[in-house]
Image (cartoon, rainbow, N blue to C red; front, side):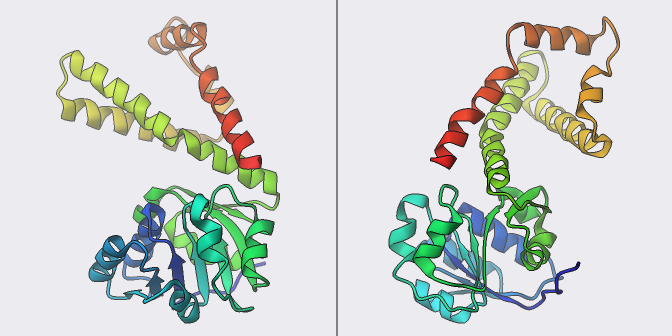
Length: 260
């Protein structure tokens, strides 16, 4: 079953943080989409910057005005302020609501906003601004998937525990960047320029991820190395120091926080 094609939608954002900026940039940076976008005035500087950059972006006078002018509403406020900002607003029954608040369940959001046509939880990431990377979605609503498909690879699931697991995996983003940074610094300390080390390291890891996704069999790729070679040497060294398990162990407390 294919969802309806969604073009020229009115999309409102309650909250104008980093992720809102990434999504708006992703929607507006090409010439293939003609959505009308309304931004919350809360972060006036960022909202004004986006409106100045893209002609189809308008800063509303209030959060309620965002809702009044929009068919789709994206809830993108920080969790600790979510209820105070959202509950006083009046939502329409025909609103299609996308929740980005990480540690709030849909049942809780529904108690704030009442009955709406659509209510889903979505996990976009900053690189949606460049229209790359995954966007997790629960439940797997086809119209929502179609709307956001130009901004990344939609991973739709229909179980709440699945979206929680996907959300937890995103917690490794800063750790991954830190790993790259440590490798880059090592390269610089061994005769490379910072530019050379950065370009090679990031290109190398990007290619590894691309190959892993293309191949699809990670367990085979792990074992596919020359006996006694450099890869085997490094792998055994890291395994011997329990170098991989801390990454997995770090996910457990994050998961507990999400499910609390």
